[in-house]
Image (tube, rainbow, N blue to C red; front, side, top):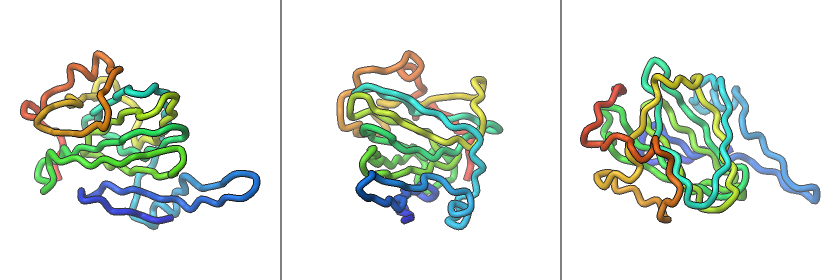
Length: 182
């Protein structure tokens, strides 16, 4: 397993060891001990999966403390551009984002600790996205930042075509009061 550090402290891209043979492939997508050895101490309590067509945007979502969620995300089938936005007040990268392309073929995983808003856009039809969460979903604590806020200048790589009502009314970053501090 290889850990790839990003320019934003705490965000990690994880490249698992994948073993191919005539039958197909095998890889370990999560091992609590190995992740703890790498410094990822989260206890993941919930697994989620979504199915999306090309152009679907989901995000930028987060849950407020005390229900804040860390996430370990990957794509089972298809391709997404995955985006994490630093919303930790006091962070030198506050308001900055990092994106990575996750595919069913590159096996990359993206670790997003608490204090980040998260979202993705499906770049292919029939994309299956999977994520582990470090806290249970709590509707009352969920919030979102407007995915296409011009102040954030996120390049989603394609024109999003399918967006939920919730994501269309996310708060502008300039009006956002973060509940997270570094």
